[in-house]
Image (cartoon, rainbow, N blue to C red; front, side):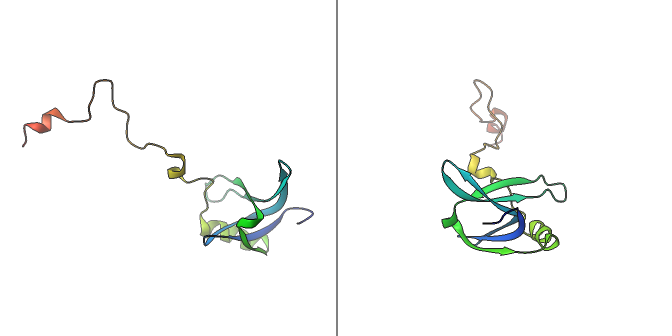
Length: 106
């Protein structure tokens, strides 16, 4: 792909876009497109690897444009829902989640 990582905007299937420093990485005998998204505005940087079949287009650009795209796209390493993270507090042992005090209100 590229001898060294270069700033790019990558368009992915499913109308998704990601911006960062793009290079090639081999993993398990398969080549992937590596996108290193830089840290911006307090958000930590991260790296994503994509198979070539997932990529619709790669647009090489200058670093300033790539940083502007990172800010605009607000890509995240993984969505919270994908991890199936429970946002509800855990119930204590013996707690059925039913508020007994509220029963008298009805």
